[in-house]
Length: 363
Image (cartoon, rainbow, N blue to C red; front, side, top):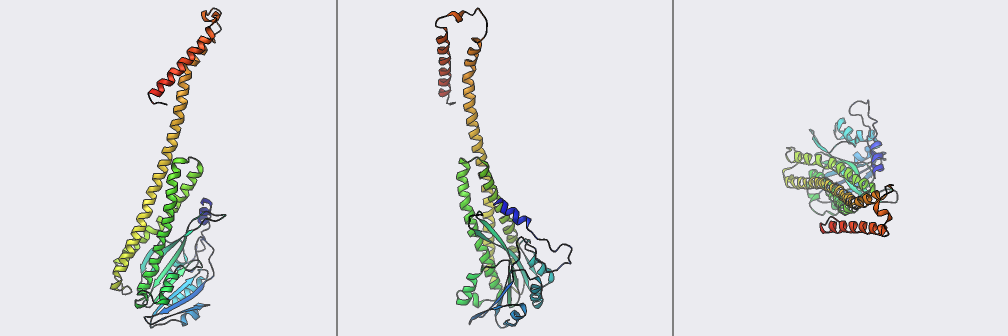
């Protein structure tokens, strides 16, 4: 996992260095994918879906009488994204932010639109060559008076539940305006955080058990990988909490007053996710402390055993040293029972010391 994270960090492309502000150049940690365009239009009566090979054809599907949802999947064609942005009066600096996937989550208000960027986090199952972990994708959302435009980095269908609700007419989504659609998209992304957090929580439970049993470098390497993952999640979630809080206080014609309870719920979910991440950080610190304490306790036990053994052998070594002296006239040297007597004395001393240590519960 460490090598994978290092590769992602080292792969960040800085093709925008030296270019004028607003230049539509992709910046990210993965190869950009070919752009795919789709649009969904709906009103309280029905809905329709179209795909388009280029921006010009996509713009012909615009329905001014209802809500339009344009999805741009893949950020490879910066020029096409600029043409789409120009058609909706989106500032070039916003386009630059869309294509720079290293931005922190934020919400910006403009005269004719709101720009929201946040990180979608999904769980990657462990494979034969790569460990499981979290994958990050920047999602940008632009809210206008009758249209919501979403920009995704990689192919996929992160918003499939929203599409199904529009097609089936379930819930209130077809009865509400584009601001509710933008809320629903952001809410689906934030809800996915809890799935990833739940998987991380399960991993941390196993690490709590391993902390008392393992003391090798493998455990420290694994726990550091999880710690880095949590730190990265914190960088993605905490700024979003501030942005959603600012959205609650926002006075914009693009967000109706009836959206207030929904935005409050969105803020509560974001706060809960941020607090969960913070709890995991504290739990990681606790696991590391437990592991270090377990290592220290095991080392103390080893040192205690070695100290007791050394203490027992100190008088025995003294006796052996005395009778190992090469003096000619030593009274016990000529004794018939001298040798077994010395062994007996040494045995009694060792046994007495062991009994003393046992009585004092030192061993």
